[in-house]
Amino acid sequence: MGLFDKMKSALGGGDNAVDSIKGPSTVLREAGIDPTNLDFSFASDGTVTISGYVPDEATSARVAELVGGISQVAAVDSQVQIGAPAAPEPLPAEPEPAVEEPVAEVAEAPAPEATEPAAPDGAEPQTYTVQAGDTLWNIAKAHYGEGSKYMDIFEANRDLLSDPDRIQPGQELKLP
Image (cartoon, rainbow, N blue to C red; front, top):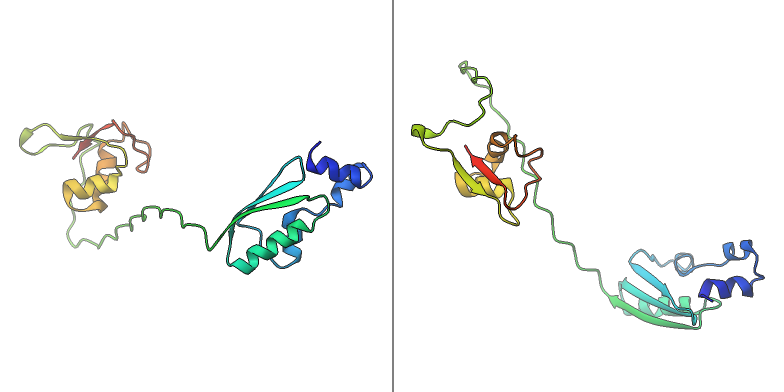
């Protein structure tokens, strides 16, 4: 019989009895404590394990006291940590879209879609094998000195890529 089964039977066993039981999150919210960074585990012997983060020692003690005061909670195992949770690794910054300046002279229209980018002096186009952790931005920065040229690589590999943010290790990319 689990903790909530015990609570249910202690309150008369009806289905509505469970609805009247306040869980730890509700008890903490009513006391003015945000339970967002806390997790609760319930053991069949009535022990509630609390893990997560609280801002200070006083809040930690208050959380344990409030949860321990809930009927049918036999014991509290507080494993909360003081301070804020570690910040997640920041995602790579999205490249700023290039702002094109108006051109005074009319440029020649590009040739109809070429299947292969033209290589200088008739040489074979250069290729690059994607490694784990690579991004088109980093590849463009390494090969052209400018990460903003990543779309050139993407356009040259449309037959292989459907999204510039989704490249896989082992893919052989053409470098225009």
